[in-house]
Amino acid sequence: MLSFTDAINYSIFNDSIESLMKKPKLPENEHARLETLQLLNILDTESEERFDRLTRVAKRMFDVPIALVSLVDENRQWFKSCIGLPVRETPRDISFCGHAILESKVFVISDTLEDQRFVDNPLVTDDPKIRFYAGCPLEAPNGSKLGTLCIIDTKPRRFDDDDILALADIAAMVEKELSTLQMATMDELTNISNRRGFRMLAERSIKVATRHELPITLIFLDLDKFKQINDRFGHAEGDNALKTFARLMKSACRESDAFARLGGDEFVVLLSNTTISYAKGFITRFKKSLGKINRASDYDYDITFSHGIVLFDAEKHTSIDKLLEEGDALMFDHKNS
Image 1 (spheres, rainbow, N blue to C red):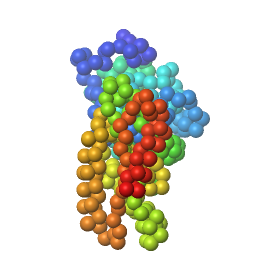
Image 2 (image 1 turned 120 degrees about the vertical axis):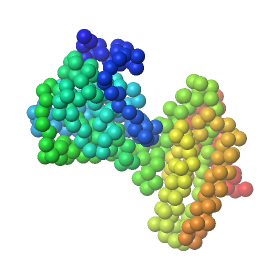
Image 3 (image 1 turned 120 degrees about the horizontal axis):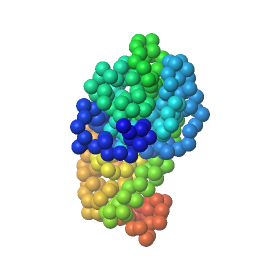
Image 4 (image 1 turned 135 degrees about the horizontal axis):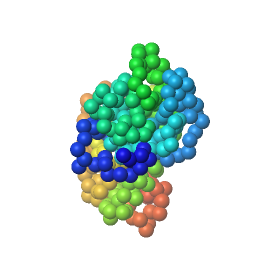
């Protein structure tokens, strides 16, 4: 039988193996969930006392040998805090936490040997011989379930309502720490990426596009006469205009696109696997949708914008800032014209 450590690398987890074990399904918002997780810039980082303190509390409170802050990545679960295990990650296909993030409340398995989903799971049949599991989903401010705070025992046990509430209380403290990390990459007003978050997403998208020789296009957008909206109707109305614009941007973009509020009334979209022609079509459709919003709203003003479109050139755009600078310049020319 495979050891716990060796199991990570073996093909026993492939679909070709006959097994009762049920692999966790993917959440409906899997792409957005993974994007949120990546933006935290937390995967494969060193242990931190602020997370380890909470897993120690959970371990002592429930008298279990194992307590984890587990983050569910695309193909693995990775442990930001790991008390009682000799590894920092395991495959997602055999993870208990992969099932837990599909739930809205604490996920409890009182005895794995009485649950067909887990009875022949390698983490049950071999080390660490899991018999009990309880995991509380960790939810980001945007609703994405990023992982769990979970406790594990090598013997079956009951877990009553008071226990569930206690685990959820500790998980809320873990969520607060994760929220602090997310706020560094998210725009608080519009709830889309900020400049720092966009730079991280854009760098990853450009690497993929370059590796596969795919075109990628940036659109720099700036609201027209935004200062007049603030001056005439107040900053609360200006904020409302920004949030309306951001919501439309979110609905107009594909899952593979990156978009952000750079600051003030400046926004940006990075369209993957697209040419200038597609980007121009995107702008045409976007303006049409924005026009519908303007006509249907009770605003005493119209939300309009100027834009600049840039096709990424690896030799010319040696950094994200270079790409943004050219988009900004073209947008300024468009605004003046």
